[in-house]
Each structure stands twice: as C-alpha cells, then as structure tokens.
Length: 345
Ligand code: SAH
Image 1: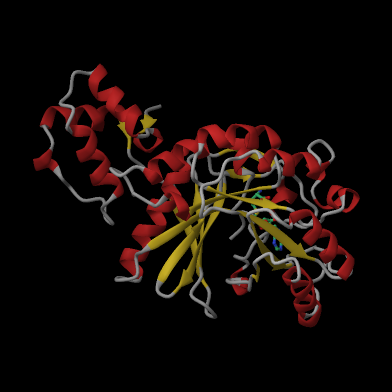
Image 2: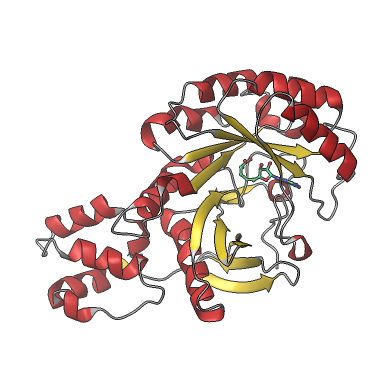
C-alpha cells in the first residue's frame, strides 16, 4: 500500500525529495498546493513534471471519505462522520463563532480511557488514527465549508477534543500539529491549537519538549481522588496530584495558561465543597476553567445540574480569582457536543 502524502511533515517531505534527487523547490510547492488551497487544484506548471510524476506514483493522496454530515438547525454546528479505509468511522465537529469556526478533531477510533461520563469511551479503543487521517479531517471539513458555506471557510482554532485520548496517540498527533503549524502548510498559529487530555502522564512527560507552544487542556472533573477515580479510571494509575505536578513543570510563555475542564454532573461533583476544593488546588496557577454542564447521551445515567447550581459553582471559583467560563453546549441537537461522539450516524 502506498504511503499517504498527508503523513509527511515538511521535513519528511524535504527528506524524500533530497533522497530521490528531485528539485528541492518541490517541497514548498507541494505543501502550499495541498494545505493552502481550499480545493484540490491542479498546479502542474509550478512543479517539474518529474517531481509530480514521482509523487503521483509513490504516494496516496486520498482523504477520509465523508460518510454523513449533520448540520445543527439551532446554531450551525456541523458534525461529520468520516469513513476510513478499513471501514472504521470517526467524527469531527465544526463549531461556529462569528462566521468562523473551531474544529474539534478525533485522534483515535474509540478510546481506551473508558471515562464513565463519555459516550466515546463506551466503544473501547479500536485503533489509533494516522497523521493523514487527522489532517484529513481538517482538509475535508475545510473543503466542505468552501463548497457549502462559501465565504465562511475560515477554521481558526483546532481542538483535539473529539474521539480518543490524543496523548495516547502522541506521535501521530504531534506530526499532525507540525503540519498544521508549518508556514508552508495550513499555517495555524501555535496558540490556536489545544490538545485535551484525561491526564495521561506518559504523554504529558513528552509534552514540554516535543510540542512547545501548543495549548494544553486537562479534563479535571473532580478535585477529589476517589470521585475522579470513578469518572476517569486512569486516575487510579496516574492520580490527579501527580498529573498536576507534571503539568506544573511544563514551561509556559507569558500569555499562556492551562485550561482545566470540569464537567458538572448533578448531585455528583456540583456542590459548594467541590467548587471550594477545585479553587484551592488551582489557585495561583496560570489556569483557566471551563465548566461543561454534562451532555447526556443514550444510556447515560448522569444528569446536568440546574442553571442556578452551575452559576453558584462559578461564583465560588470567582472568589479564587480564577477566570472561569461556563461552556454552552453547541450542536446538542445533532449529538455533536462534548462526549456525544460515538461513530454512529
Ligand atoms: N480524551 C481527551 C479529549 C476528548 S473529550 C480528554 O479526556 O480530555 C473532550 C472533553 O469533553 C473532555 O473535557 C471530556 O471530559 C469532555 N466530555 C466527555 N464526555 C462529556 C459529556 N458527556 N458531557 C460533557 N463533556 C464531556
């Protein structure tokens, strides 16, 4: 089977070119052509025929196939179900804000973390996605926008908050980030990419050296180890205090902070005590808290707290002077919100 062109970062591409004695200018032309154009245009005149023939013979340029598209009637969120070569399916979500979009990418088919509140975890881990399958979600969604919502094809933020634990598929996610960041490629700003983790310490340890500048979000969900064990089973192996210690060692630049995500579940982790303890452990850190009222899915037994309880929780955090945002669910009507992704149409 041919290797996918979209598995190559810029230096891999330069290496292929030099090893095969092709004209070195082909690297930037090819990257520009594939990552900066909204449509797969023909660009034959700018590249030597020899180089073009070489790549067409040796590499696969196909992208994940769009299986179904669900457009939210409420808020223009778009959920894509992609079919991969081996028939596995993954989901990607475009989240609108002011006629621009954030894209929520999947990093694995299913997930091994088995968090009790997450729909994706219920399928278990099927396999890791390749770099090209990650980059491919972005390219296909972008092209879909160019075609279906012309003038709106701007994807300004990338969040790895779809299916899977991105730090459990570190190498492929890292390479996808390198392609997104490359000035020859999509040229997304380093502050515009966020990787969200359940607290997978082996990945966090590689983080600071290998993915500098990209933002990190931790799914915290409870400041109490016992409760967190119940929500996020890997907490038993990588407990929260060790996770926080590891994150504290990651050097941040001046404007950077870590996002701490906190799902609010009715009568489970939404009491004033929970908020006090959360505030206590995060006070003084370069932190930003995202409160995510639980999104239900078929078969889930958790519930979302009432709005006044959510607001009370935030008020307590405010006393710790930690910037806190209550995240409103988008795409709820098409099961595209956090934790609702499950590879089914
Ligand atoms: N594995 C990564 C990224 C995927 S989940 C992680 O754990 O961070 C992205 C975010 O959605 C996480 O904060 C996750 O905890 C949250 N989430 C999962 N299921 C949810 C649900 N049912 N309701 C609200 N948020 C959910």
